[in-house]
Image (cartoon, rainbow, N blue to C red; front, top):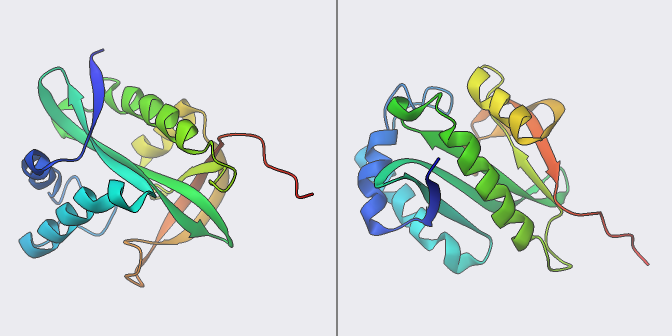
Length: 175
């Protein structure tokens, strides 16, 4: 399968609009207004400059078919990497998300090299999102259990999620 990740760019705005449907966003609060969408696009463009993560467009051959990201955040008193993804309906069930997830895990493992980098990657799909929970299992995440998760960050809106984790490297022991 010819799946590649490419850093988010101005040309990915149309993809973001395709993702912004009630069906695609049913587990994360629904479709957003154009103003919210443009603000999200600007945040995605700025992510690499923060040094804390990157949003990627998922390319299948010549087509942009989804998005996947990782970013650093605090969770339960420690720094972690968080990931999330979207694959357009016409490309779901074809292994695109699994291929993109595998590629992303390799990117995050490389990012986790420095001593001060987080040593785990978490995903927080809604407990009702059967496909995303199955993908976490397929990618080798371990289920830590259900949790209340604020999404989007800073919104004070919580969703009931599953906390899935992959350990990226051995935890460092304090000397």
